[in-house]
Image (cartoon, rainbow over all chains, first blue to last red; front, side, top):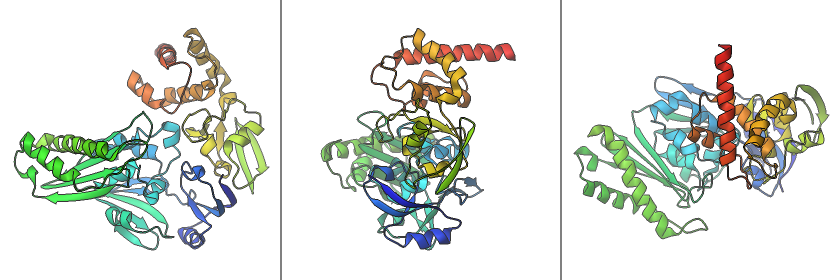
Length: 264
Length: 157
């Protein structure tokens, strides 16, 4: 059971940061996952009064406040247009509308959960996190960082013309994914992110690969085989290591074909 | 801590515990349409509207409802009765435990989606689980209800 002694709606980020330095205090995102825990929280730090529930679009980037919900990502026209609906595809399997109206982007990213569809998808994009003290760092670096007591303020997604494909597989609709794969292409560079292995998403990048020429089916298969071999897999109640590895191969292959579609 | 919120347009000011959950508060204030189901944010039985958005009251800290307008099915009696008739006609419920969550989600969907396809309906309502019906009766009822609403809109325009 989760117990909270004080609920504090902070007035600024510095206040949130100061409170978050104490181990018994916790920043609450959407509360959908946190509520499943069994712990005593001294001060629950609420960021909902800081205006971080907006998605701002500029010519170069999207600035997504950490308190934006997964539903905000799903229905944002600019995001879906820029990334060919990949973000919508990544979140719309997550439980239902009422859940996605609660779960926050900040919670998903800060938690760096193994099952996270959002993390897997964003990893394949030119994505940065803005931390109150740590400043701006690439998401792929943030994912590897140890948990600390900084405050995740925003997610920044650069408009770099990346073409993206997102796919996942579940044993039952609305369940956690048993594999999640995002493939993106920017000029001659290809990015492959695989999550729910069941470990958290990881990213590989390859430049000047099969995508330079018109690749044959065999070349795409060889690339997918190589790419899936760059990740570790594990077994749990949802799927075996071997099954996940094979699925990763299949979805990387499909993803590569999808991002190449307009080129050939 | 003291909070102020509106439940079905009735202003309530109350002193609450910091870890109080919206679901418990609503039931304590007579909103028995709000059901406690899975408590793992999955089943949709506790669905209510907060500032016009569907949320899970079992996964919402009451403190976060401070200053907000919460609507439960008790506040949507007329609309619920109308759609409930379609559910009944199609034999679309058995135990009825999930019905309040489903009905409030359908009413929200009608406002949000224009002429939804079967797939869009199923996706929108994927967070409302029903262990009795198999969903087909519900889908028939929703489509007939949408048809009627569409006809009404056409008549008005």
